[in-house]
Length: 491
Image 1 (tube, rainbow, N blue to C red):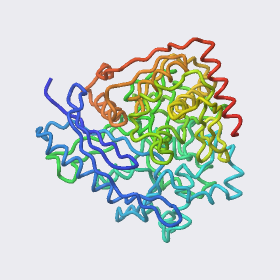
Image 2 (cartoon, rainbow, N blue to C red):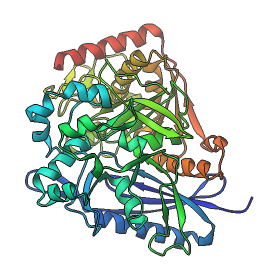
Image 3 (cartoon, rainbow, N blue to C red):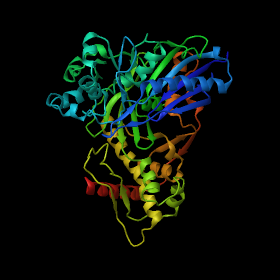
Image 4 (cartoon, rainbow, N blue to C red):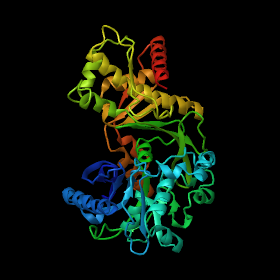
């Protein structure tokens, strides 16, 4: 086969990465650039859209220069992106109306508290699969229209574009020729009806957002337009996949059939289960979204987000000062007494899925005379696995699917004690791939498959370390019972 390459762009909250993959799906190199986290006195979190676009061009240029490959052999591009971060720009000039409102910014809370919006919360959930929240773009778009001078007039004149980061990059990379998004990103806006597979005119009306300002929704593996990265390439190539970052990780992990699931262990955690071609609205505290639409076929997911997983380890190091480096946790966990009654519930700012209690406070319970530093570190480490177990059990009930395997990624997965404990407490296998950039890998694989460069055999390229449950049933049930009792105390 003639040597061809795929460029994958992963535009994340902290920075932008470009990765290069060969015709076998092997990553050959990457280039990264951070961007500013703009936080004002009110705690609003923003990003400069132009800075992110310029960084995208720079990382692609740097990647190709370092790789030394022939630029003519680039076959296509895939994009994965931070979800929910919201933008507004002028369709005539292409300039942003304001800085992007980052997903974690709650400035649009007042929009969700408006009587007409709050009163429609159940309708919104039943059509979008999402709980009403300023986390999602719907209220962020409304905030632009209510607070940024001139945006409402431009919307009325048909000269305003509203979109997430994928749409902004597509628009800029194609010189304004493409105004598109994919199904995974659209399903996270809280404006997209996941049953009719269209922008919901009724919900758009509730938020006073003209549907004409929203992008065309396309299959996740379709051609979103052509780009040469501002002349970095000698010819234009197709952008042939777009996926929200969590969806990209699910695809990169090869979770292509119902019941397959992944957990990303980051500062917090995103747990996703592929539930197939029919949506299921959760009654157990998680949300429903689209995984993707590829080859004309839709896959849905259940998703749960946890506030504090890897952040617990950061707290142990920076605030509690019980460890100097995250790597110390593994040895201390093995050193600790294993059968004590110590539990740590990390409700620093409440509990996320599946409890959704913003008033909960953290606790360390079950302390005895034998409790020492190692036991506290072990309890803090194990709380990560317990929280993920809670979300997985909720998904399993909603989907009526028994979980037998969990695919994982992220920094904490290097902790062998944690991974074995995760397998034990789930009573399921845990698989850890030898690669970290699963979102970018997913976007690359989707583009490569769409272009005929790869087959689904590409998913076997990832080497995986496998953990199998090795805990007696009685001990597992005793530990889970103790965890549930500890959580009940803080709710």
